[in-house]
Image (cartoon, rainbow, N blue to C red; front, side):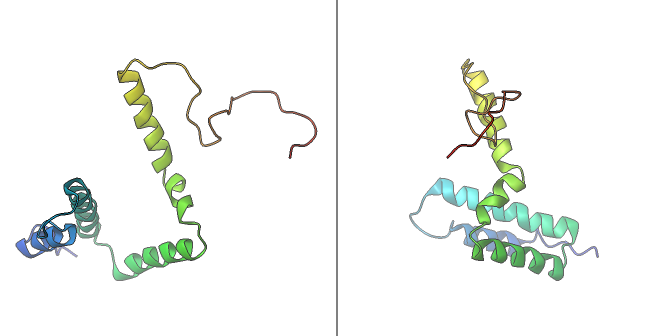
Amino acid sequence: MTVKIFDTPEVQDFLKTIAGFDQEGGNERSKQIVHRLISDLFKLIDDFDVTQEEYWSAVNLLNALGSQTQFGLLSPGLGFDHFLDMRQDAIDAEAKRTGGTPRTIEGPLYVAGAPEAEGFAR
């Protein structure tokens, strides 16, 4: 399919409404973030010609994760946690902050190759 509607005035006006740009008050940064997020998703749908079935499958996955209080697992599963760690590492490097333990999904005290204890822990 070659139908592309993202750049139409109707869609662009709709995005501004969704983000709340037509409303007084509110947090301007939040409005900008919502506008960018939804715009990028709308553009993705247009560019990849996402079908109704694909869209609703994704919605069903999010519903299932939410109903089982597992939504938080989506963040590391999609790599967001690691990306944020990489970004913070770059911020620290730019500020000349060095040392400390590396950020890892295993936790801040994880050390690769450390000896494993025999026995059990509580």
